[in-house]
Image (cartoon, rainbow, N blue to C red):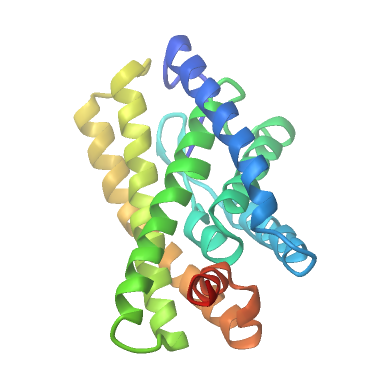
Length: 225
């Protein structure tokens, strides 16, 4: 969900702008451990794919649009830190070159989609995958189910991030209750669509190049250790 300028007040924008800068800097440092010569091209493809799907927007509230987020997809395929960087880069390009999301709202957008969405989606995927592996090997179809649930939860959590920011410093006239209802209801539907796209994409990569799927590589590294 892209926020435009003026949805939250200046102090709230500054606070989340500083949080976004700090988290992106941390991700840039940590992403080196997730990438190698094989996965760098995949990270570029993931960023390009997310950029394309995020350009399809529809209005939710005045100044707020809804679209697919891609957080769980990025985290599962290239890792949480690299995934957060991919989405942050996409958001910066969209804000500066395409006027999609306000410049002063860039920090809140990055926190919601690149931080909360990625973290919630990735943690859900890791937890579900670990639970499934205790019983048996996880088939590709099972990985798809995990990706679907992770994307759904990541989308809803990102929407809740917006609600929290609006509660802290909402500058619009829409009531908090109305904002919460609109955001949760709309993004629950978006999450279903995102879950399907995420599941299909992750299964396609897992079938052809399982060695490129970060979630699978991470598990193998832990077993080897």
